[in-house]
Every structure is written in C-alpha cells, then in structure tokens.
Image 1 (cartoon, one colour):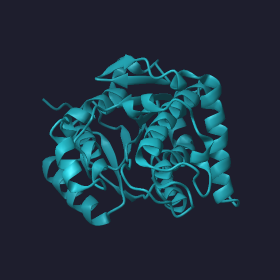
Image 2 (tube, rainbow, N blue to C red; image 1 turned 45 degrees about the vertical axis):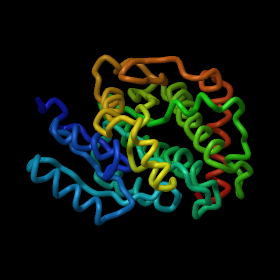
Image 3 (tube, rainbow, N blue to C red; image 1 turned 30 degrees about the horizontal axis):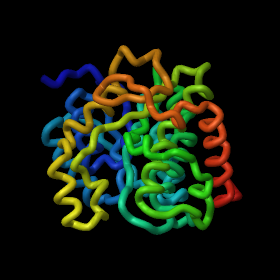
Length: 286
C-alpha cells in the first residue's frame, strides 16, 4: 500500500516519461513526493503528468525540459530547478541511450554525452540545491555492462570521439556512471549528500528504442518489467538505512561489488577531472 512517507521531499528524475524512469516517478508520487519530471518531450510529459494528477490529485509535478545530449539544454534545465527555490532531496540520473551511433550537439559521442557528460554537468549545477536538503542523494542508474570494459579509453571524451560502436561506448558510459558516483562520494564526504550507482536489471525499457525492431523484440523476451527495474532506483533514492552509505554500487536492492576498474579511486578522480575539462572545452565561457 502507498504511504505518505515522502511528503515534502523533492525528487528530480531525468527520462521520467518512459521505462524505469516513469515507473520510478509514479512510485514516488504515490508516496506523496514532489516529483520534477525531466524529459525531452513536453507532449509526452504533459500526458504522463495528467495521468499522475488523476491518480494523486495533490502531487506537485512540474515539468522541466531536458535533452542530456545538449549541454545548453542541461544548463537551462538546472536553472529551472534552482529557480524553484527549494532544496532538492534527490537527483536521479536515470535517462540513458543505447544502440545508436552519432554525436551530440557539442561534438561528443552520442552515448557518452547522453549517459555521462550530460548527467555529470547536471549534477554539478544542482549541487547547491542538494546541499540545502536535510540529506541530499545522487542516484546514477548504471548497468552491469560496465563489467565488460577492461580499459577506460579516454578517446571516449574526445571531440570528435575516438571510440565507436555500441559495445564500446555503452559499457564505457556505464562504467563512467559508477566511477562518477564513487568520486562524488569522496568529494562530498564533508556534506550531507550521499551518492549511489546501480544496475536496474536488464529491463524491457525504451532505452533500446534505437536498436532494430526484431532485435528489440527478441531481447525483451528475456528482460524484466519497468516496475521491477525501478526497484533498486527507489531503494537507493529512499531507503533510510542507506543514509550513511555513499559511493557504493547496488543490484537487486543490495550492495554488490562493482568491477575492478570501477573500484579504482585514481581512475575515478581522473575521470572527474577529464569530464570537467571536456565540458569546458565545448563551452569555454562556462
């Protein structure tokens, strides 16, 4: 049964109109949370918000347009969230992309830009609001695909990108998600902000929308539902017992050990510095 245990708390979810983001947003609204709906499509967001308002008439559900493949869009979205003038209790970096080659509007690999650089910048810009919360949380939806990466190729952050293909870029972006959470935990150790990364399970979500239709159909026969996939995101975002844990990796609502590379503190630190430099190189007036 839904409860009102999250009343008064504010969550911002990217990719909130589909897949596990949608399931996460609905579960939070059911528990009386204020849920900022981050998505690219205003039309889809409006339809989803209408559904939630019929189910939960008292819910606060503002829409923030955001395209993580555009650093300018990320900055605008962060500005809107900060302009609400309230503490942000939880940022869930949920939106992701898989299965399509290309580059972002800033010249980065499309998968790396959407899955890592966009969320990296969004997180940095929202830290002031997270610091104001009683206990701010940053949740990075990663993947067990990070285990496949045996060496972190810095060409992934180049413009134009120097690595290509789904196998290389997706796993690399997910390793970056885990390392990002780890390094943030170190940098924010003297604050009330905690960080988490997680594997949601292999979910039949729209992250696979750019794969060939037949491939999608076959893959989804072996995947879990969006509601099941949202469980670990919700656990990391809300579980009281995790309030003193930070920088750790979760699967099926329990802490597990990530890959050897994901445990490398020097690699996590270097990724942070290189990611910041990459974003600055694309927007020198930042």
